[in-house]
Image 1: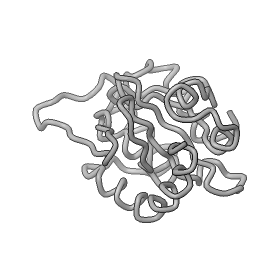
Image 2: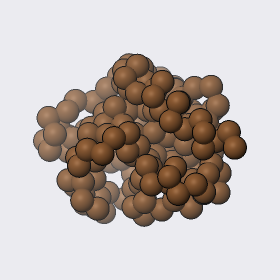
Image 3: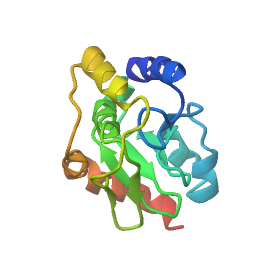
Image 4: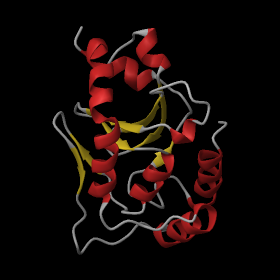
Length: 173
């Protein structure tokens, strides 16, 4: 994979373990479109604009980079989530936004209408959570978030309508 952020995260994940630093998150095979093909669309134009790269939930939801335009820096493109029970939403404006979401250390809830994060006050953190937060600050100068919905709202304000219009012809066939 040619994205420095994900290459570094893969190295971190190799050292800590899949799912060990943010609940249910793990980098997967780069651009494995089988989930998209099985649950959304086999249209080559649809698949060409999405790059699946990570598991989002224990149930099978996953993250993909949406090639909203033809910029070369894939890390600067929006990240979308595809829910295991349906629904697809912009969740972060770019990869660094997703990395901050991961510091909240809970899986997203995804349905047809919305995506949101809920973390009970009494729930503990993943085994390598603190190490991940430190790693994120060291490598990218980013801090943990205590309001993941703020990141989601900002991404949806910037990209949500455009993503909804783009996906509609492929999903309503």
